Length: 114
Length: 113
Image (cartoon, rainbow over all chains, first blue to last red; front, side, top):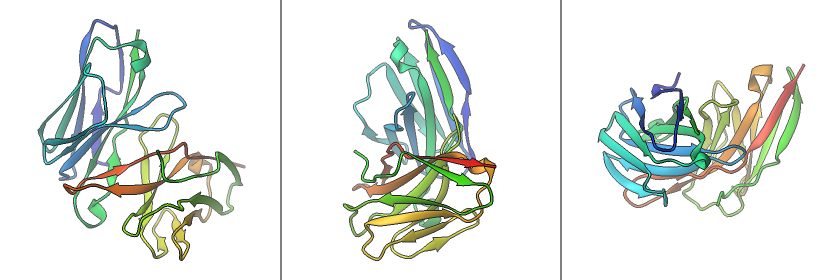
């Protein structure tokens, strides 16, 4: 248990559906991240939010839309996805000083796009 | 691209020490070395990190060479539950105070009875 939770843990959706992934951190951190892990590939950074401001968009297609309403919550809105978007989506949070300057990951959402 | 290279796989007998090597020859002076592990289909778990000095915590020890071009993660008494993919990562800092972890393929450690 790292203090970072993600819901749902598993999601199956069609290409025309709209769904959202939710991440919540209980660590008092100020930065949050979305990563994608496709089968047999390294984790890829998608988005970074620092103090609720998006500081990085790693050339992610617009069918993925992040939202960070406050420093404890992060969403990833999904629409018109493709089968190749099936992957494990991981959220992480990070503090800003000392040992807190370490990213802690949630358990991930396993997404399958049909 | 990841700034580290690791062997793709290693084996270790249960109860023995597991020594996982990592090369990071292009590391800069203010960049930290981080180690995470990922048990199948779970989120990566933080293990340990260091800058110059050797570090130890309840999970592992980290040995960093004096020139900082390589490091070794040591699990002193490996158990079956330590079977996982281990990632050695150089943390990259950016202006604005945020950092990035760039993951490579990692080392798949198999602990066997």
